[in-house]
Length: 179
Image: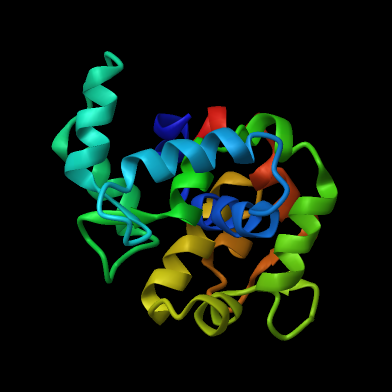
């Protein structure tokens, strides 16, 4: 699951984290995910250190590169480059194929990200809601627009955002296979 999470486009990883946050108290696997996280959080600070996660994965026969954890923590934990919090951990282990089939969750995430409530998630919406740089937001939107069937003209329009149908297309379980 973690590898698929990292292979998804950046906006999808962010949205999956938003959904994990929305579901934090009620996910189907919450008890197991929380128990695993707490076991990995050896010093009880609410964060899992990269060394602890790497050791855990190795003990379960999973060998990952050193860049794997950096990729996992990079988008969402810039202030904590060598650890991740519960929400990122939950997002990375979320059974996204099952949960993202529920359009209501995707619509709730869309509504949270659509800061100006114009029915489009734009780079400016992402900047306002997530505090990312303007360049990062434009890159995230462009990456999605390049994968959801936008025309060449639409792909070049930096002011354009992502509509609800495009957002749902990006979040569909099948779209992760294409990216």
